[in-house]
Image (spheres, rainbow, N blue to C red):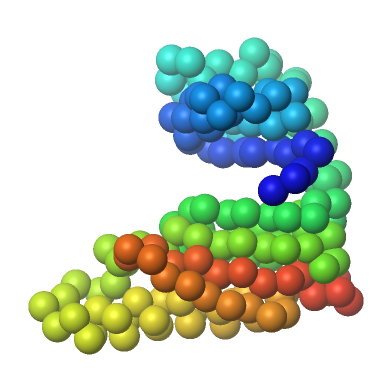
Length: 165
């Protein structure tokens, strides 16, 4: 995407391992794509997810992340429906006014199973899930668009210019 540098964060040690492997596989400069393990999972004993950070360093990282709010041009959140809904304000808060915000992670599995045998109802309920996320994010984003591919939905919007978070 042409960024000079980027930061990735996750609470899942396996996701951090995978991200670091993908950085290496794509011959990216790891000093320009930093990936951190944060949150309650940071103390888990997942092999290969060591962050070489003690509690003081993790506290400092969390303070640095909080001070980074409002500084990014692009925010991508690839998490499931419930966290996308619950963390909307926090996700958007890291973007500058006018930042591009990309949201994905709405699975077809999250469509209510009651009427799965009727394909048109699956499409309808999937549409409703996307509409729910659009409604939540409409208070923070302009120009929201949605796309769907192979059971996954993705939304894109621009952080409102005069938004106070």
